[in-house]
Image (tube, rainbow over all chains, first blue to last red; front, side, top):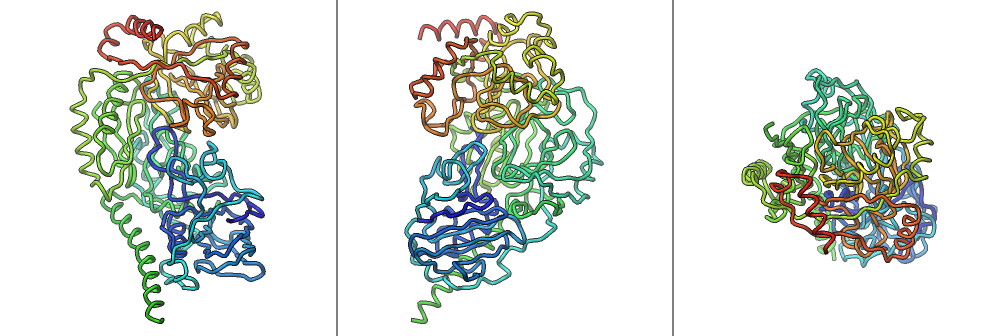
Length: 334
Length: 290
């Protein structure tokens, strides 16, 4: 079991996400930075999608009630086990009764504590992810608080093999103050004037403080819409459309005043014009974009999106592979 | 308008049929979406029908995006003539002009077009009604077709099955509220919607239903499987109730004994368009016999 001593700012149980329920208005939820989450699981010998803890800005204090193997990935933050500072991205043993202290994030936004065996709370609709807005999944649909007890599954033999091993630093995602996001333009972008689309792609957008698991509000130039008679049922604002489904990663422009990029706890639909969709793997970069940092958009087509997706999966596969090489090396050494 | 097929990033396809709301288009979308579900296409995670468009969520590792688009285009042409849709008639008790939505409207008066009256009175006036009972009768008299589900779990867009001229319309709040009570019955644009959970919103506040439309706790047997009440293609009939009935239904909900009054029916679009009023009346009579 993991015992929560202090929940930190917003620590939740997350996994790969809850899929197949978007049509009832249930977004996937799941770890916002999927790469750091999945890599963390690989580092402790778990299946990639085992449930873990997602830390936001300031970390929790947790205690293990038995010996375990853990790793902390994602955003940069100080981590101590009892009094000893420990590095991130390296799996280590913790002993029964040890306390794990996570401090304030220095760089990035979200960190992951993965534990060998995974967090084994009961899944809902196929996932253990917490969806805070509708109080669904996780632990009573809420962020963790003092005295929560989280069951941990049995650890796999692979967990031992990677303890203490360092990943090739090139495989660890960099946390930048400025991110380029690849986007497929379209959806309702026909509502915008052409020069407005060009301006959107040429500008740097500032991440506002209203940025959470549901969506990120981005500040930049005002959008200009083409003139029209409002269609029946759309609403009178130029940014209104007859309500549509919103893909995760889509950007909407309410009133033309700001851009909202929908994340993994997305509202699944509504009546604002959407203008394009950021590809799934680049949402990891958004998950780590701090308020005040900048993002830019680069328009790509579906073929380039598929290549990007493939590269992302290859990087994860290389982590898995390098860990299994450690495993073999360990065996050879015996 | 020609149907548009567009990639929503690397995992979604957005299919847009029209820019204005109509039941004709929505019936067609539901029929196509039901067919996609029936086909269980490998790589398709799910399909999400909306008012005049739909969204497909898929895994490009399992189905090539361009191939999926071609397949969806073929389905579009096959679904020209819909014989029937399965559609439930659902009874939604509503306490109109309730104290909680009035309190909420007052609290966010600075964001409203006319805070000197209640939202219900405001809609009554701009829709040309002079009498509250008459307006409530119009708002609740004809069922709402559930043409889309989403936003948060259980939110259902209800489009009243009346002619455009009789359609009740409402502007959204000037600036959205940061709070709305759970189960508030509201109206925005041409749609009726009930808030499944407490939260922000911009629709005009009309009343409150005692029955949950989303229940993550598993307290009510009818919501245990899907957690939400709405199914796309439902017809929701709002039924005005008084405070006594509101409280007695609340007590049943709290005790976990409340059962939703729903009747499964075959809905025939052609019969509906031939004479909407008479057809709805016939379905209503049939439902009452069940």
